[in-house]
Image (tube, rainbow, N blue to C red):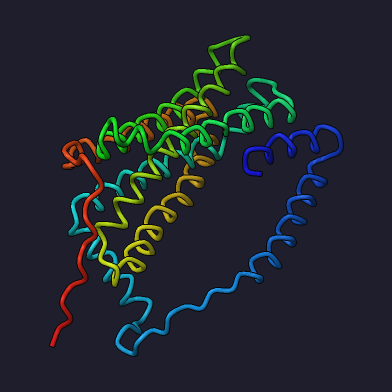
Length: 268
């Protein structure tokens, strides 16, 4: 549905209006609630010792993230990329409609066809990881997803080839993003002890999603000050710079997924 959704939304806007597309989206949310409610899974009971305040859990997670070199590099790289991606995404539709004159249906097709790259990435992520090694696959995924974003402002110079270029940029971005997520998140889960994994993941999401929101705000502000194209160019450059955090880590020598980290010994 994530692949077909943009095309369906573009068609609804083209035939009816934007409100109809939002109404269909609201209906899908209403349908997902009962489906989630039907999930039956009994969570294991936590001991009293595992109960901690939100602040304490966040501090423990952030402390581990900062002290673990690879997880720190992952977090800084993802935060840089998502900030830059949000800058681009904040003005992307304005660029498509006002600068390139694309219709809602064409925009929907760009996102739908491009999302196939994510499906392809999921199908080949395992053999690519074996062939390139885990570390190099993570680096390749980071470079590809950033390169896909960097191609977006080039559409302004592509003339009649703008739409094929945007489809290709979306394919490259989705393919690389899937490679990144499969191998990076697996590696991060293995590096975090089981007793800390939830706090580590929560802390990472706190950082990367926080800067994601700031990126959207920055994108809107830059577009108002500089214009749409300079904002896209700045976001594209920032997305490529996100890989630098990985290039300076020990990721290049990681041939296979690391062994599962042991839980720290409890204090007396």
